[in-house]
Length: 130
Image 1 (cartoon, rainbow, N blue to C red):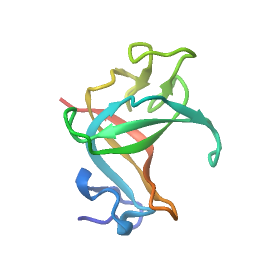
Image 2 (image 1 turned 60 degrees about the vertical axis):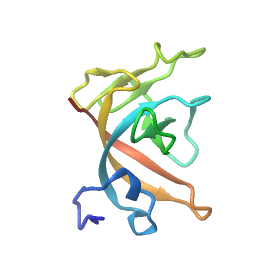
Image 3 (image 1 turned 90 degrees about the horizontal axis):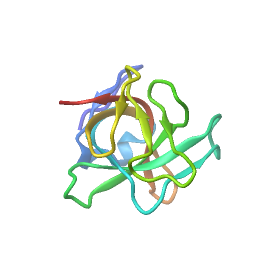
Image 4 (image 1 turned 135 degrees about the horizontal axis):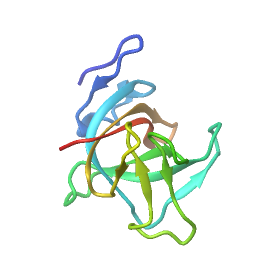
C-alpha cells in the first residue's frame, strides 16, 4: 500500500482501497464502472448532485466499491436520464470524451470510509485506459 502525502495522489491496488489507513486519502486506481441494480443520484452530503455507480476490478469479479461521480455534462461528470438504461448513461472522462460502462478506466479521488465501514471513492477524475 502506498499512501499519499500533501497534495499527492497515490496509486492504490483495488484490493487495498478500503483499508482504514486510506480514509481521507486521494488515490488513483484502475477498474471498470458498472451499474448494479440501480443508480442513486442526490446532493446529500455534497455541494452538488452526485450519482453512485459500482466500480469493479474485473468484469467477471464480484469485488466492488461504490463511486460517487458529479452529475453534469462537463469533464469527469455523468448524465443519468430518467428511465435510464446502461446504454443511455453518459460518462465524460478528463478530456470530455464519452466513456461507456464496462470500459477500463483509472479513477482518482478521495477514499471515504464511514463509521460503519462503508467505503467509497469520491471521484475527481476519470481517465480512459487502453
